[in-house]
Structures are given as C-alpha cells and as structure tokens.
Length: 465
Image (cartoon, rainbow, N blue to C red; front, side, top):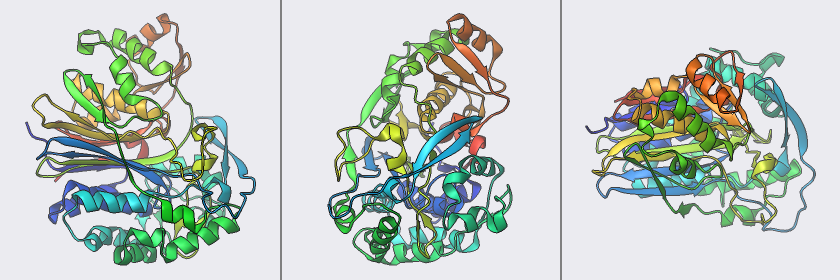
C-alpha cells in the first residue's frame, strides 16, 4: 500500500505550512524546507535558522536514499580573534540540574540556511521565494505557544531569556504560557531577505556580516572566512534490517543504525517483556543523558518521495542577530559533542538521525525523525517497533509511553506496561518511574503507510493531505 502524502512536525502551524506547500504542487523537499523555515517562528524554543541539522531524502522514482549534513562547524579559520570564556548556566530537566555553556564563544557556524537551500536545489520544484513565503507570514503574525513547549521553556529559560530573548519569551518579566502568542520582531524581515537573496545572505551577504559582529561582540570568534567556507556535505547512507524492512539513515553519534542491527532477528518472535530487555541491552552501551533543543519535520508527497529534516539550536546561545529575531546556536557549549581533534572548519558530530524505512519491493514504508538528543535513538527505535512489529498506526506508535536507558537505569514514562518493567527489573535494571509523558523522552514526527503522527510530548501534529 503506498504512503499517502502528509506532513508531521513539532507544531500545528509547522504542519499546516508543509501541507499548504504540498497542496500547491510542491514536492516533499519543498514542503519540508518550508516547514523547517516556519519552525523559526513556531518552534524557536526548540530550533531556528541559527542552528544546524541533517536531511534524509528518499527518491521514489530512482529508489535511492540520500543523507545531507548541514550541522554546525567549528569557527576559527580567520585566526584573528581568540574566543573568550563561555557563560556557564544551569537548567533543570526532569528534576535534575544540568550544566551548560552559552554566549558568543558557544556559537558554531550555522547550517540551516545552507541546508534548506541545498535540499530545495536538489529536489524542490516550486520557486524558492514561494517556499519561504509561508514562514514570512507566520513570523509576521506570531504563533500560539503549545502547552508542551511552554513546559520546555520553563526548563531552558536560563538559555533563552538573556538578551533579546527576554522580551520574546518573558515579556513583562513573566515566561510565556501555553496558548499565548510567541512573536519574534524582525524575523519576517530576515525571512524576506532569505527569500529575495537566497541562503548566501547568511554566509557571504549582509546577514553574515551581522552574524560576525554579533558573535564577536559577545566574545566569540566566528569570522568571514568561517562563513564563506561553509558547505553542505553528502554523507554515506547506513542500513539495517528490522522486522523484514530496511532502515536507512546516516551514522549518528548515538549509533541508531548500529543499535537496530544489534536487536535480535527476528525480533517479532520475542514476547513484549523479552523484547523490552533486548532493546534496553542494545541501548545501554551508548546512553548519553543530555538535553537538547531539537525538532523534526517529516514529509511525503503524492509521488511517494520522502524528506525528513531534523534541526537544532543546541540549547540556544542567547546571542541574537540584531533586528532579525534570530537566536544563534550553542553547539560549542554542548560538551559531549566536543572532541580533542576538533579543528577550525571541521564539522561537529550530532545524535540527530532522520531516517526512512523501505520495503523489499523498494517502496517507502515510513519516514521519521525525532528531537531529544540522547533520546532520539530511543524514541525512533520504539516508534519503529510500534509500527513495524506491533502493527500500530503511526500516531499511536509515536504517542505511546516509552522508556530510555541511562547506564543500568530504565527511565519509564507513566503508563509503560508493568509486565515489561518487571522483566527489565529481573534483568538487573533499576526502574525510574516518571509521573507523566515528558519531553525528555524525545519528539518523533513520522509519516508512513500507517498514517502521520507528531509527538504530543512537544506539541507536535501529523496530518495527511
């Protein structure tokens, strides 16, 4: 059965933008790019133009999968400025205080403008300005903040409220609440410039000049050579089999494809409790308990092409492009992403893993991605098992309670099956029972043969055209 055209994303307004572009004749790439740009207005608690990301595209006609890297790069090619110390902050996530660093020295070279441009260049069919225009209108009007994102805002406020973010996220000194309007003054102007002049405006154009000045004024070292050298990379595509289907994605820092390969085959022959232990064992070795501001867009068009794009700001640097409503990323403040061999111009690593699932006949089965840093792999594996093994519709598979493994502890959401938790305990895991479904456990967006689903943990929605 062919996958119907549809969009799943982290905010109803983001999903609606993608659907409108599909309805106007756009390809999956057009709709995904439009939705990603719309995220800068609708999901800036999680992501934005000042961040980086990855895309996975399935070409239905050629039955090929392509993975693109437009994540952040290390600055320093100019060599004329030494970065100052980063600003340490602490955020509370899941009741646990966690240290982070923000400010100008935490900003990596943003990749979202270049990545959106490259996805559109390769697979888009609408004019560029028509793909950008829905985001301009959204930025001009403002967007209602979902309750789920309002809860996230409380956790990450120390990173988002410095500088211009104070007026945006805490007007009058009070954090925005669910249902209130999130508005970024100047963002419509920034997107208008992107529509008129293309992505280069952020690299060798006037927005690039503003970016260099803003980062250096905040103690960072990004220079013109850093921006001019930035390029989107095409990555090797990795493969794993799961429940008789083929999963394709890049190699991410958390080893999603490697984890799927480590699962018992055929996994559908295991009881649910035994399967839970097998999944926990596969996840345990690579657990990374960190927070990240991330979102995902998954799109399938009428021809069966799929485009999945995951983007992030890290936690946000608190460095804003003046007058443009754009917060920059804090990727250099994410300590677990920094390795000793990092050099200026080198691409950073990430846990993001947009993926597609293809049947033996070469047809698309599912297009999916997730937010959630170390929980991305967990959320994706559970969603894939829900759709491919348990026979759930996509929306139910995304929304059902799931668990995440940290060392020898299993963190389980409210409602996770008790018999599976009991089996995990017998296998030696300590069970940490959460009292709710929580954004800690990721934010999946997926479209497939079983429909479309956006993660309620982060205010997401999924709709078929």
